[in-house]
Image (cartoon, rainbow over all chains, first blue to last red; front, side, top):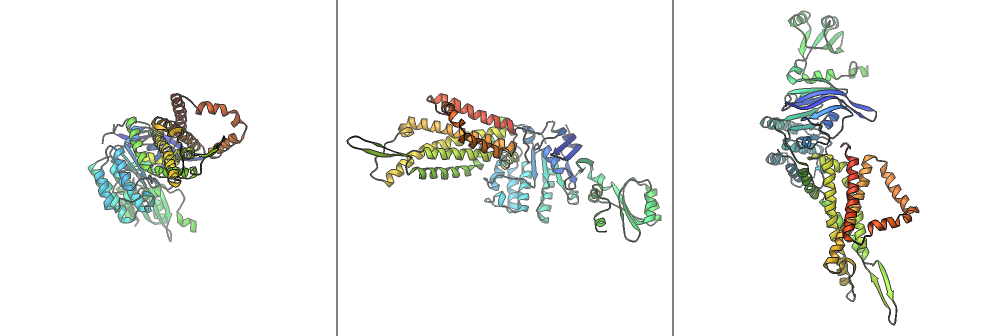
Length: 299
Length: 243
């Protein structure tokens, strides 16, 4: 079995709101997959259901071949780290790590101890009293040390400063290489994690919008820039992702990368500026709902 | 990476150990509650006087206040176990809703026995304090304090009463988790019942259940009722989402 998570048309409704809308996806084992989407796209809801914390309203979800809701096997093989995670206050942070060791079969207590020390935690620290960034870091240590076959990080870096964030991503990558496992990593900032990811699952309005290797996503689109007329001519028949009017009759557009050498030649002849679009920008353009952009609000 | 299989019994055992560690604060609270109970008991719970040629008057002391306080403590502790925050904590580690409920029930059983022991022993502490503050006192020990076997019987039955309080607290807490309106409905129903005529009519029923001569029959009745409460709670919360 090479599938870790399988979702078939899962829908989740809260009271009147539809958080997920017939989302389907298959997440392969032993890969780092980024779950990317705008605020409220349904990332956290999806991860909550994969972890078995929430029930699906409709559809079917399978984690390691079982329905995760109330499955002990799934729980024993999953760790779910998120930024609203609450840990028991009756224990110190160090004691929480010791409990983790009791519960998780693959737990690496030596690694936990070394990370605990490296990030400046002391044996008397209580989770609730840590700063936001340190709390996130502690949660991340818990997630890394558990070595769960399915490790889920939902916005793990909330509140962390730049240096700590980089350290965390590096720790994740190193540990993943040494002990490959299925990792789901959600973030608003794809640019920050794209070097880490193998696959990207882009969620938009509660549905899967795109699911592909990050290397393909980097070549998914190109941008074209130049005088409005020339660009409009050049665009003819191509799949346009975004279009922005620039100053003084100039046009900027992003199109799906189906272009051939002839298109490149044509662009060069008309002095159009053709350039690649970064994966994170592609995601922004793809999930942009409003026409135009923030500029139009001010016009 | 291969999957880890884990048995339900194993997880429950680990969770009980985890709960004993993480709720150690509950035992500190218990100490305060029982000390407070002893303090209130120092004034005596009743007085008597026997007349004849000589009149003998005296004061009764009992650890009833301590036991009632302990019962309230167990009820509150059980309610706290059912709150959203505490359920979430279980899900940080390995669990499902069944193991979470079973380990909570066993944990409450353990703390009922511990607090039952200390509640009965507090009666002895009360006696010692009375002797220390009044050197001329003549003490006659009765109830659960006369000999080892009666003390053991006292501990046994007190623990069962405390367990009952905990089980009811767990049931009430679980009902609140199911729907917040229960926060109002349960106290309203309780006090409504207390001040209505029903409480008088239901008196004999309560007496039949809670006042039992045979200790084994009492054990069966209390454990049965507690199991019913825990079972009902587990059934109610088995579909509950963790947020």
